[in-house]
Image (cartoon, rainbow, N blue to C red; front, side, top):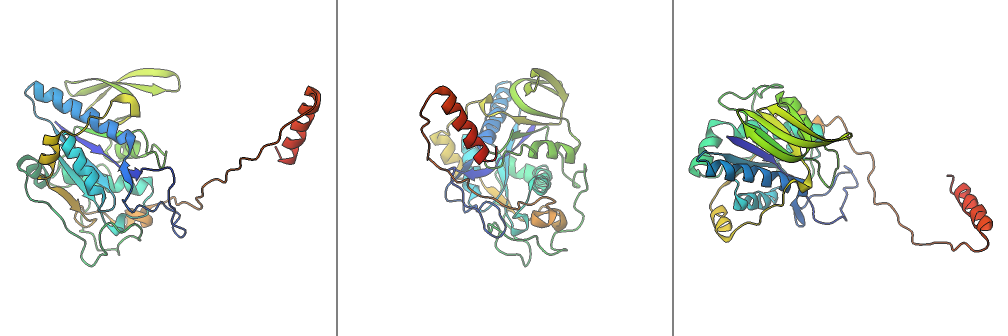
Length: 318
C-alpha cells in the first residue's frame, strides 16, 4: 500500500509578513511549522503503516510538499516520525501559486512519487535527487513568475492521467485546510485532477479493507459514515489524531534518508499551469485589521443607555 501525505509549511506566528507587490505571504522559512491539520494527516498515515506492519503487510508513506528549500527540514522531521520517504517541489516557477496551481504542482509530485525511480529509492535508500530547471533561478526563491514556456520537459500528463511508468497511490491524505489560508480546496482539487472519490473533514478512519476505506466525516447535518473505493483522497480534521513525537532513533535514521528536491522541469510541470501564470485567482489586497481598545461607558437610565447605543450604531453606519 502506498499513502501520500501532502503537507504545507505555515508561519508559526499569527503575525505574518505580506509582500507589498504580489500580495502573497513572504515565506522565508525561518519560523515555519507543519500545518497542524497536515500533521494530523501524517499521524493517520503512520497509524495505518503501523497496523499493516503488525499484520505483516508492507506500507509506504510518502510526505510531499511544495515550498522553499527550508521546507526540507520539516519533511525530514516527517521521516523521523515514521514516514518512508519525502519529496519537496522547490522552484521559482511554483511561486505565487493559488490553490489550483498548487494542486496541479502537487499532482505532478504525486505522479513522480509513483514512478519506478522514486519507488525504488524509497525501498533502497538511494541517493538524493536534486536538480534545477536549465537556466532557471535558484529553486525556492520566495516570489517569482513561472518559467518561460518550453523550460519544462514536454509530455506532461493531462488531467486524470498518470505519467508513463508511474502509478498513483492507494490513498492521498491532506489536512482539511491550512491555518494560513483556510481555503480547504487542495484535497478536493487533487481528487478532481485524479478522478478519485474524496471525503472531506474526516473525523475518524474506521477501516481500510478489501480495496475500500470507511470513515466518519462531519457534514452540516452531523457526522456521516461513508465508504468509498480506493484509490481515494481524504482531508482530515485536526483532532482526528494526536501527532507522535519523533524518537531519538527516528531522528538518527532520518538524517541518513535522502529528501528528494525537484524542480518544475524534473516533474514535467507545465509552466502555463504553474505559479502565478497558472493561477486564475490572485490576492488583490491583504492587510492586518486595525484594532482599537477605546470604549465608551454608558451612563444614565436603561432607556438613556439604549438610546445612546442606537445613536452610536447610526454614527457607525450600522
